[in-house]
Image 1 (cartoon, one colour):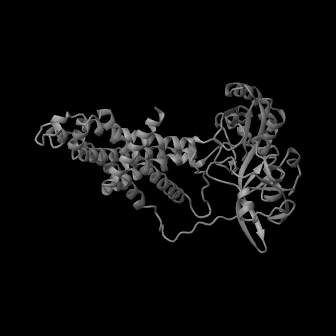
Image 2 (cartoon, one colour; image 1 turned 180 degrees about the vertical axis):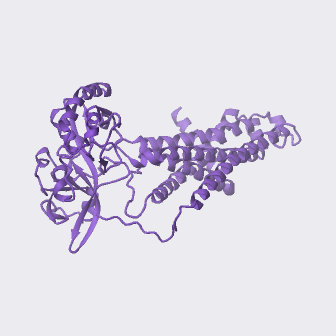
Image 3 (cartoon, rainbow, N blue to C red; image 1 turned 120 degrees about the horizontal axis):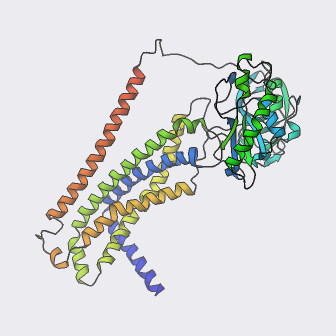
Length: 495
């Protein structure tokens, strides 16, 4: 029985291949159409997966939370990061007195100036607390990472940790790099270790090259000491929930901790008229399993909208292919009638047509995955700018592959299954009559094909109307009077 089933399977597959080989033009058009529809959907979903759906590549990311102010009435000072931030005295109090989390850490994005001879170049960096890497569960590829002993008052330029990508690209993967020095500003800083590959930092879309302890801020940044300031909000604080605890439990504990934390962290630089507001601040925690990302905040909604538009493109492709399959099936009605007369069942013929559809979908899906890779990189290049390139993990995971497989399955059902039922449901006696009202050239089949054309035109009009509105909006934005000459303007950033 098993041998017979395998024989039938291989015979149907071979017959489907031969049938498609006799219609190379139809097969090519179908594969290219599906590659465009599936590729566009997969590319956009791949970006959404990287920006929104994936967790940080760290130990138990679902336990991570971000600690921030519950509200900001009476808030004063400056914030040097786009993410929720606390000042250093407040972070130190939380670190030393909290019993809410199993581990806590703090970090802040920065630009590190590396000196090479008489030249200095800026590379993306991180201020990190001593337990930053340990709390995330990041292991070293070489040497060691920071510990709490490295982040202590007056630490100076005691050491730096570099990322695996920076070690490979800028330090040539030197296995003896530990103990050598980086010239950060005017300081020769020893390299303590290299992070494991795959870890790019807690930000989605931005990687780091060099990490230095928070305690060294005053050493590198001589223009201001933020370590004893309550008006400089620059540290993003994250905590790891204890096993079995929930966010509500953590927030209740933070509510009890807040009064003493804000009273102890108040410094003389905070405006006198806002001290009462500062003392009324409260801390809350939110889930941070996916890290933080300005890219997510800015582009998540447009990406969902683009995914919807790409879905319309795929529907149009399916309607077009269903019409082609109906027309092609109409030309094969007599063939099916002969096969039915010789004893073939309707189910067998439907299965045969589905095999042909499945082969087309498989080729279109593979081509779509290749196209999606190209489109994803093009979209990232479009969002990046000089000196601020995006770093996203675009390797397909189970979500991307599952999404593509679901698209392929729906495509088979949409353009393959219904035409197969429609083509094979005629009785052999009716199919053999060329002038039968139910034959391939009959009125019912023509009405169905006209209906599919109407669906294609309707969906296309929706896309064209949306495109016209987008172009009109873009034109208005490009032609708005800014009040000054916008050409030949250079933006420079000075350290």
